[in-house]
Structures are given as structure tokens and as C-alpha cells.
Image (tube, rainbow over all chains, first blue to last red; front, side):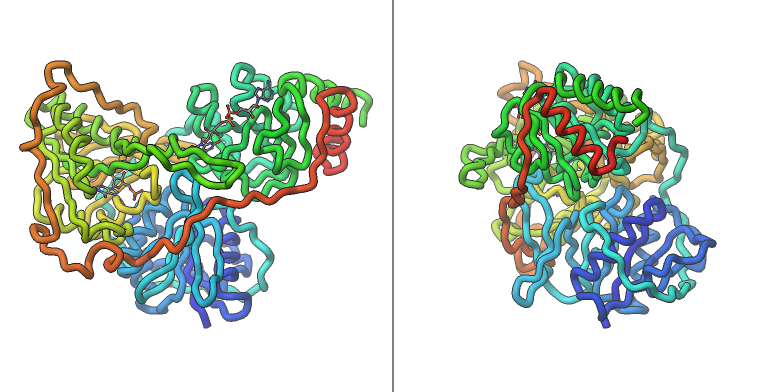
Length: 316
Length: 265
Ligand SMILES: Cc1cc2nc3c(=O)[nH]c(=O)nc-3n(C[C@H](O)[C@H](O)[C@H](O)COP(=O)(O)OP(=O)(O)OC[C@H]3O[C@@H](n4cnc5c(N)ncnc54)[C@H](O)[C@@H]3O)c2cc1C
Ligand SMILES: Nc1ncnc2c1ncn2[C@@H]1O[C@H](COP(=O)(O)O)[C@@H](O)[C@H]1O
């Protein structure tokens, strides 16, 4: 039996399912025992995805107390002897995983986006050099296999429903030397990763980026951008799609004037439908698109918005 | 007050060119640059030093001796000293081995705070600062975008951290590791004209495995816990696609496509 520990993401339950999917890719379907470490105990009945959910006896541990979480997880490992430990590559997860790896004296592969079995060896695939290259990395030495997993990289397939056990683990954490003072929302903090439809702009629509809003309104979508627009100050980094931006999995991605660099495509994980509008039909993004519209992006917006409004007017 | 800045020189990946015909990266003439996040960390240290001139800034890097010129450029910027940890035995170190080497030096020196970058441009794991914090028993925070100088000088800095949807403010008891992000406003100044050719080479100290008392099995490939087995350019899967013109007919086809898949009524 392969024992797997997953650090649960208190904010995004899909992440837990994605990490469970990774355990299946590593060990196969049947031989897995999965334990989720939940930092903020919840009252609700667990969904049946894990074999067990563990809470620390001391109650909640704040997500920013990476040292405390690593210490607790290491104690848990001592008790259960995990084969695999997975941490989401989220803001806080990225600070916990390295500490835990150091405590356990094991290697850590960051931001994994793929798992491959090569002969007897397991390769963890991750982007490097700003996403221009992918690297296949193997573990060396004894101890559990450890990695942080990029969100949205492993779409969950449904696993078996389990009778989830709740376990309270005796662990008392020391107060952190870090004090949380407060948080303020960043303006317009809507997350492009949660959007079903993204209207995305690149270098070809640099001067008319605001026009994307027209299409955004009629399609009830969100706007995103390539790095080019972020670097030119037209779009905010929060809405950047790509290797150094966010990985998104919208159902529909409309790419307006985006060339489609490897780094940009790295951010498009599981796009069901890709429509590319580009003056150059040879632009790299066009080779990946389901539909290519050859021509000016602004004209495209105008026409399509009119067409959709026409339908709405006629009550369609 | 002593500030240690951990810095790293990386290939300028912006200059990497991709050959779509041959599916290879063109890596000729790549120059090394100071990792952008680390440049912000050094700039942040310089800002503190402006309010408190007694502050001593030391930059520490583990790198080949060929980065000396870059270190000299930094030393012409009101930075007091540089530690160059360099040894052929260290090459090929993963973050685990790198952390070990850096920690060995940091344990034998004094500091009030360690400033680092959050991500590096090449490996971009963001692991070294947190791993070091664990080994040194220090609190650590990534993605710092602003640091309050006056509370810092009192030994308990408050600072802002950029998270996905919010800006969080924390304070921490020193010593600590704070990892700065390039989204911060800190920028390195230019070298003053009269300093351009100043000889600063005596302020670089080079350390090898002997001074740090490191065994071969602790560093380099041997001391690593991960190994890069191969690297490749991602294959993009080709799809069957429809090519349309940006005219009435084309737009109608797009509309139908959206309708078929339930995106419009
Ligand atoms: C370390 C690193 C990380 C990176 N990370 C990312 C990342 O996360 N995300 C990312 O996107 N990039 C990233 N990049 C940058 C990337 O390599 C490109 O520089 C960038 O994506 C180019 O943006 P673009 O395709 O929008 O613009 P351009 O390259 O300028 O392309 C513009 C496209 O628009 C077309 N066009 C021009 N005019 C029109 C018009 N009127 N109507 C329609 N089409 C038109 C052109 O034919 C062209 O295809 C990264 C680079 C590095 C080195
Ligand atoms: N070889 C090194 N020498 C000094 N500092 C380093 C080294 N490698 C990483 N760092 C520091 O750790 C940060 C994150 O790097 P990385 O973990 O490689 O993404 C960098 O921004 C540096 O501040």
C-alpha cells in the first residue's frame, strides 16, 4: 500500500482533487491510501475523496505559519511513514514544502505539471528557464517522494468514494514569530483562474486593450492578457496568463492579437475551445486553435458583439 | 545593523530565442544578469542604509568566479562587502545542496536580517529561502513588496506581502529571512560617475569547501536529492482547425461555434 499525504488547500477544494489525481498518476488506482492534512478544521462531512482527514489537536494553524505546519507534518510522517507527500504550489504551500523537505532530508521538485514513468523511474516534469524548457527530474536518495504541484495542471478524474476517517493528531504548535497584522483587498481582485471564459489580449491589441471589455460584457467573461501587455503597463500582472503568470483552464479562450510564445502557452492548461484572432495566420497560437479568424482584432470584437446583441434583441 | 543579501546571477532568459522550425532554443550569446527579484532585495537594503548609514550590507552568492565583475559593480553602490562562495565541487547542486552550502556560511557569520529574492529566473523554484529558514531556525516570508524602515530599525519590521487577491501586512521578530519580489518598487540605482572605475576587488572574499569545511558528498551532484534527467521543448499538439476570414460569414461561423458549445443563447 502506498501512503500519500496531501496538504489540503483550505480555499480551493478542486486543488485537493487535483493532488489526489497526482497520487493516482504516481501509484496507479488501487494501491493508495490518501491522507489529507487540514489546517482549519471544518464541521461539514468530508466529501469521501480521502481515506482520512487529519486535524491537529491544537486546532487551527494559520496558513502563514510555514514553520509550524512543517513541524506538524514531519511528526505525522514519523507516525505514518508516507511514500509520497504532495503540497499545492500556492503562495503558502510554496513556503511549507521546502521546510518540510529540509526536515525530512529529502529532495523537492517545485511546480510540477506532469508525471511520467520512464522505465522503472518516475520523472517529475516542470517548467524551467521561464517555461522555455521543460525539465524531467528524478528523485535521489531515501525518504518520501516530495513535490509541489501547480494548480490546474492535473484535471481531476473521479476517484472511488471512500469512507473518510477523521483523525485528530496530537500536535501543539509554538506561536509563530510572524504576526499577521491585516489584509486589504487589491482592487478588482477577480481571479482569472476561476473564469469559464477568458477574453485575452496580446501585442496585437496593445493600443485597444480596453475594447476587450465590450466582448467581456456580452459573453459574461473575464479579461486576461499576455506578458507583453503586462510589461508595457497596459494590463496588470494579476491577469497575466502564462509561465510567469497564471495557469488557467477556461472552457473558452479567445486570444486576440496574441502570438503564442511557449511561455504563454504554458499557462493554457486545459482549454476546451480556443479561438485565435490574428492578422498573421502563421502565428504559433494559430496552430493550436480550434478556430482561427484571420484579421484585425478590434474589427472582430465590433462584429461579434453586434452579432450577439442581435440575437439577444430577437429574444434568442 | 547588518543586512545579508543572498543573490544569484542567472542567464538572461528574455534573450532565449526559440526556433519554431527546428524546435530548439537558441542559447548563443546569453549573458548573465543579476536575478531581478534579488536586485530588488539589494535595492531594499540600500534604502534602509540611506536612513541608517551605519548599516552594513553584505551580498552573498554561490557562483563561478566569473561573476566577480558583476559583484564589483554592486560594490560600487554603497555595498560594503561581498562573499563569493565558489568551488568546482559545488557545481550541479540542487536547492537542497545549495541550501547546505549557504547555511554553512551563514551559521558562521552574524546578521540581523537576510534579504533574498523570491524566485530565480532560471530554476525558479523559490525553494532556497524557505529551506534556509528551516535550517537556520528563522521565520521567513516570500513575495515582500514593501518594508517599513522605521519599524525595521527598531528590530521588528512590518512589511507588505502580495498575495493573489490581497496585500497582507505582517510583522516579524528579527532575525528573519525576507524574500523580496520584483513586483516591489525597489530599484537599484546607477553607479555614481566618480565610482565607475573604483577598485573594489579587495572587498570580495572568496570561500571554497576548505574554509566552509564541507565534504564532497555534501555538495554538488553528489549532495543533491534531485537530478535533472532531461530537458526538452514542450510539444504542442496540433488540432484540426477551422480558418475563417474576419467578415460577415466568418463572424457568423464563430457565432454558430459559440452557440453550439453553449456560450451564447
Ligand atoms: C522567463 C520568461 C517568462 C515569461 N512568461 C510569460 C508568461 O507568463 N506569459 C506570457 O504570455 N509570456 C511570457 N513570456 C514572454 C513571451 O516570451 C513573449 O515575449 C510575450 O508573450 C509576447 O506577447 P504577445 O504574443 O502578446 O505579443 P507579440 O509577440 O508582439 O505578438 C503580437 C501578435 O499579434 C499579431 N497582431 C498584430 N497586430 C494585430 C491586429 N491588429 N489584430 C490581430 N492580431 C495582430 C501579430 O501577428 C502577433 O502574432 C515570458 C518570457 C520569459 C523570458
Ligand atoms: N546560488 C545561490 N547563491 C545565493 N543565493 C541564492 C542562490 N540560489 C538561490 N539563492 C537565493 O534564493 C532565491 C530563490 O532562488 P530559487 O530557489 O533558485 O528560486 C534567489 O532569489 C536568491 O536570493
